[in-house]
Image 1 (cartoon, rainbow, N blue to C red):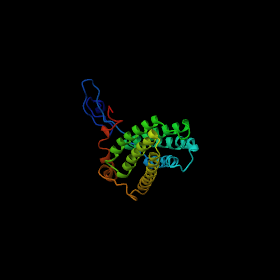
Image 2 (image 1 turned 90 degrees about the horizontal axis):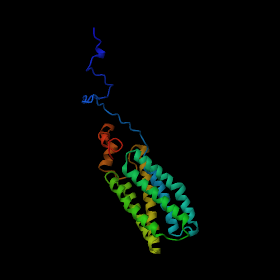
Image 3 (image 1 turned 135 degrees about the vertical axis):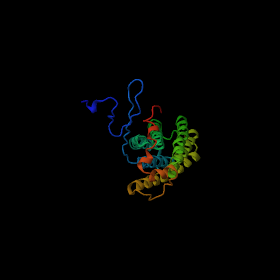
Image 4 (image 1 turned 180 degrees about the vertical axis):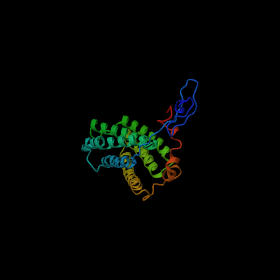
Amino acid sequence: MTDRSSQPGDRTDPPGEADHGTPPGGVRDVAARVVLRPLANPLPLGFLALAAATTVVAAQQLRWVPLEEGPVVGLVLLAFVFPTQLLASILGFLARDIAAGTGMGLLAGTWLSVALVSLAAPFGLTSRVLALLLWVAGAAMLVPAAAGATGKIVPTAVLATTALRFAVTGGYEWTGSDGWRVTAGVVGLVLAVLAAYAALAMALEDAWRRTVLPVARHAAGREAMGRDLDAQVTRIGHEAGVRDWL
């Protein structure tokens, strides 16, 4: 009597694996399993760090603090803002949010540069090299802003206002003009309020599992809050980190 468990051609796949046929080389394809790790939303953390950064820099630009405290501003950016936004960037990429990961990463690098220049340059000295960096960073911030525009208006507005803040601050660093300096400080304070609101709204939304303060979700952003898990991972096989090429 022949043991049926050893006959050629029998299916021995574990549950959940699919047999796509045996190619000429004799190796049979099986389904891949992708494991997703639940992560908390990192944007409130990143936006609160942004609010702190733009506030202390605006305070110096508006002369609320003396120029002699420039190195202290640099230390605040270096010790608090840079690592916080770097962490938010890493968590954003792990959460598969390209706008959050890219935006927070750009912010981390830009504030680190501002911090190092503040520590190295004499009090009150402007830098055209820093101006060029700020202009490039401002233009770069429009990329995650455009990517996020398909989902949430308020976070997108934060990123777009950050681009404006960098551009105006670059104008001051290039010219040394008091007009540019005051304008940069005012835009910085507006950005701080907007970033703090976005952080509060998104933190409450995640904590209460419903919208408390509006973040203006639409299109993909609204669907992400309403679709079930199966619908949201339908295209996971085509995302970066799963597909062969970025």
